[in-house]
Amino acid sequence: MSVLFISDSAGSENRFDAVLVGAGIMSATLAMLLHELDPDIRLLIVERLSAPGLESSSAFNNAGTGHAANCELNYTPLQSDGTVKTSKALTINSSFEQSLEFWSSLTEKGNLDPTKFLHFLPHISFVWGEKDVGFLKQRFKQLRHLSAFSTIEWSSDREELASWMPIVMRGRDPSQVVAATRIQRGTDVDFGALTSAYLDSLILTGALDLRCDTEVINLERNENESWHLELKGQSGNQIVQAPFVFLGAGGGALPLLQKSGIHEGQGYGGFPVSGQWLICSDMDLIGAHEAKVYGKAKLGAPPMSVPHLDSRWIAGRRSLLFGPYAGFSTKFLKNGSSLDWFRSLKLNNFGSMIQVGIENMDLVKYLLRQLRQTDEDRIDALLDFLPNANLQDWNLDIAGQRVQIIKSTSQGGTLMMGTEVVTSSDGSLAALLGASPGASTAVTIMLEILNRCWREQMESDLWQERIRQILPSFGGDLINDVDLLMRTRMRSDYLLGIE
Image (cartoon, rainbow, N blue to C red; front, side, top):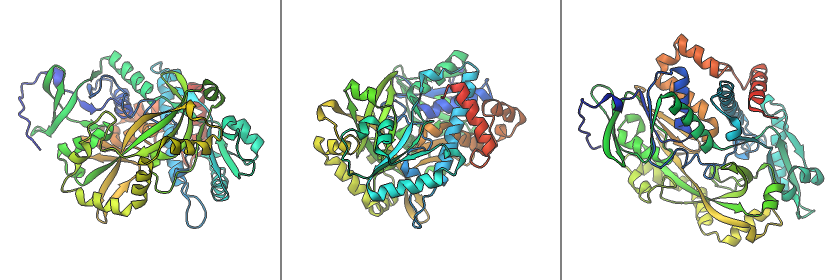
């Protein structure tokens, strides 16, 4: 790590209580929580692009599904005894309820307008073939007995399915075995718009300094236990300092974690996965479909590649997308450098990355098949969902970039498919790695960071009182306490206008 030459005469305008790197939904959520808990905290967010929420949080780059495990089949994997495992689905569902609860409180205070980022539509799981229909039936039988999913509906009746998803059933082979489940209380979230809403609110209070077109090129812990960050912006380089740093820069967090030099960050590597969408241009099709319909992923596919036909609001306009199609790029960010992956290779992670590549050949083969796909191949995949799909109605475009984390363990390298929180032993630095389910569970993830890095404040009576004002269920159990779950949902539904 290179050495920063710091002058202690730096002005107070460059000293902050916390510096958050990356102006996406993660940093914005943490900033909002910190401000609610202590309005006097002085915050700086640094963003390398020209505006907030343009990378992973953008409505085009992010699936937009309010991930509550309503329809995502990869959250309920099949077990050897023929049942499905529901623990992850319950955890994700409770985390999304916490996000809804937080948005409800901010809406009640007049600090957020849910109509700017939140839309409501059914979440549907759709499969075909005897084997997958059997899996979905088992999943339905188990989920309907859980309070979180008690409203789930099942159907294998073609007429009823046509009422749920007209364009999906149109032109389908009548001999094909099909089935679907539906939960009506589903959402589409424009996380880019939510990010901007958070940050606009904070800037108005004077608590936040947002610096766009600015990149962190180095960071180092000083003898006075303060982090010094070297920033490169349009006006040149400068140094800022803070006792706490959060690296929430999506795929850009891993290189900064490596530069920080903290022991806890050693051994991490990254496996970048790119994506593409087919975007519908037929307004009749867009208008005829109002649901998020998720299918079953191919063997070896990463979580971000679960195929879905997706009603989504982008810049306030309803759209229809299908995908994503996975690929491989050496970039860690959509707007990153092709050298990102090569620069991340270190002596302490190289062996783990080789091992993970060998042990996950299904994933490697899947990505190679995806890279070889032609336009006709992509349309063939779309035809599974839309038998009457016309190539002329769909245009291919680049979706977001994600970095699956590779972690060194005592058993060797492990490919981490979810979100990984890394914190220094003294709590002065936190980094968020990985991708899934990410934005939908941002409030829960940021509470974990606060509990690790702001423990003394979180245990104080003042912060405990304030956090229960914005999260009334805090400290409770939204998975096992049915009454608490129902009260929380009723409050959120009322304040956010969920029908």
